[in-house]
Length: 522
Image (tube, rainbow, N blue to C red; front, top):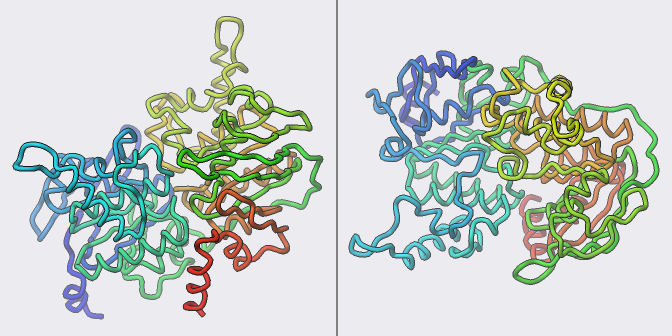
C-alpha cells in the first residue's frame, strides 16, 4: 500500500515529535516520534517501564512532555490537564482503575459531566437510562445503581470502558483493557472496538498479551527503555518480531524447573462455603488438598468464585463456613494476621487497592506483613530491615532507584514484584496468588514464573488463580476448574488440554452459548 493510500485509509490524527519526558533519575521517553492513526487500532507494546503508559498519559493530558511537541491536524497543542485533552476528544481507560468505590455505576460514568434538568439539578433517571444503554452495548447486565465497591475487578473494568464510551471520544486509549476480563468479555470488547474503528475512532491499545495485539491491531509501535524500536503496519508481524523488538531476543518462554518429588499435604479444605450478599453461593462446598512443592492452578471465568475461595482461605470473610487445615491443624475462625503467622500468604488480584500503600516507600510496603521480624522490644532494627529488602530486590529483580522512593513511582510490573516480595517475607508454607501476572510484561512474567518454580522446588505449596489458559496449562502440577462457585473439573498436568478446561469452566447458563461458539468456530 502506498503512502497516499495509507493516509486516505487511516489518516494521522495525532503526532508526537521528538517527545521526551524526564522524571528524577529516569528518562521515561527519549525523543520519540509517534503517529496515531484514525479509524484504526494502534497497538503499543513494550516491557514494564518501557514508557508506554507515560506516552499515553502525555496524550491524555495527565503528564506534560519535558521537551518535544504534540500535533493535531498538524497544529501544535498543549494539554495542561485531562480536561484539555477531553475537549479535544481524547479519552483513556487506565490500567489502574480510576473509579469512586462508594458511588454508583451511573454516578461514576457521568462524574464531572452530569446530566442536568434545566441546568439546575442532576437528572439521575436520564443517567441511569444512558448507563443501561451503555451496558447493553457492552453486553453486561450491571445495575446502574450498584455501588462500584460491590463489583469485581473485571466488572469495574467494564465500567471504566463505558465511561470513555459515554464521552464519545474520537481518540480512545485502552491501557491493558482485558487484564481482568474473561475470554467471553474479551470477545465483547473486540466487537465494540470493531464498531468504533468503523466509526473512524483512533484507538490506542496497550496489552502484554501478544496474541491479542496481532489479532486486533492495524499498526504497531514497540517501545524499549523509552525509545521506539519498531513501528509499522501489522502486516507480516508475528510474536517473534514483537519479542525481538521488545527485548532483543527471538523468544522468551516460561521458566522450566527440574522435576521434584511432592511432599505431604500442607493445605486441606473441606466443604468451604461462602454466601453472596444478594443470595446464592460465591463458594459452594469446595474441598481440595495441596501438597508441599505442588503448584495448583485454579482456572475459571469471572464470577466463578476463584478469588472468593482464596479470600476464604486467608480469612477475609469471617462468615465463611467449612474446615481449613494447615499441616493437619484446623485454623477456622482465626484472623488474617493469625493465618499469616500460621503460614498462609495472599497476593491479591488488585495490587493497587489491596496489595500496596501507594504513598508509602518501597521498603515500608515490602516489610508491612513481617514487621515483627524486625522488632526489638519497642524499636525496629532498621539495618536488618534494609538488608532484607535489598536481598528481595535482588531476588525478584525489581528495578528501583532507591527503596525509599514511593512504591507508586514504580511501573505496574515492578509494583507486582513488591507485592510478591512482601508475601514471601512472611516465610509462608502456602502461597495464594490471585492473577499474579495481571498487567506484567513477558519479561517480568517469566521472572515471576521462575520464582514460582523455584519456590515449589524448595517445598512451598502454591495455589494460583488465573484466567490465562496458557499459564494454567504450563505452570500447574494440577488444575482445578471452577464455575458458579463449584469445582467443575480436575486435571493432572498430563491430562489437561484447552478444550477440556474451557468446557469445564462454562457455567450451566452458558453451556448453550459455548456450544454455539464452538460450532461457529468449527
